[in-house]
Length: 328
Image 1 (cartoon, rainbow, N blue to C red):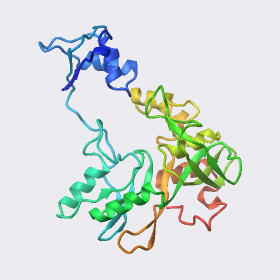
Image 2: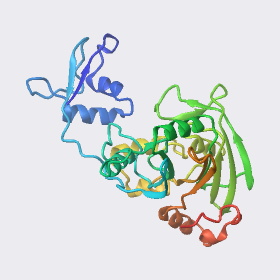
Image 3: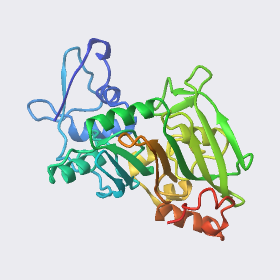
Image 4: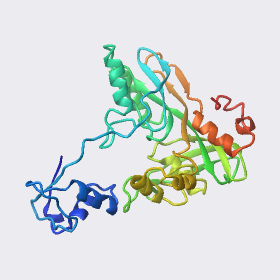
């Protein structure tokens, strides 16, 4: 059961508007559905969307037994030693618990696997979006965690990503230097380009292309939220499957929340998840102090996506010597 106390500044709102305000990601339609199915008075009688909330009132939402969405419940191990664990995270697996995910997260899987062996539970040193696949670095000691997180904060770690994008890049390689900031209105998870935002720099190299799509290597020099997705969208080449920064902006994301992935939505998006993969990561090993490079090869769903878009598949790479380990 969820319990919300109505503050004075929200008194006088309709109940559905109040619920939407307390859960900012909700659409109005979704908030109304929650009220209709979950809002009850203490005597058990249901409430209506049009009820007006009063200052100090307690709004109760009684949810059905929570069932987490299905996610992959595995991860690949790319490297493991006494201080560092490097894993290959599948798309769809969240990093940390949220209101929607608890046990179906990478952090929970790490805890259950390593606690069962009476080992130090690896601690995730950085972030990766739920839909993005690829490399995640974890620390196996407190000292390694401190060193790795500091290295990420200081941008001392070199990262590359692979993405399949719509459209034609303006040049075979180039730089995108556009500052970013969180949006000031609308869906609060969104980022936008803004002159007064934080600096954000991405280098890109086209590995292969068709008339309508490209396979691109991306090298971010900063680590802003959604940086690669926003930058590629800004130059007219959004990542295939991106529900927030494609041609329809956030409309597919809101539709997906309401309906799930329908055949029509999949047709418009081009893929059931954003075609973005954390490919390589190079860092100073916290114990040996030597530079260490990890590689997570392109997963099968993105290989198949590209093969469906290009007759040459991955054989058509224009820069095979630079990224020869792209293919699975």
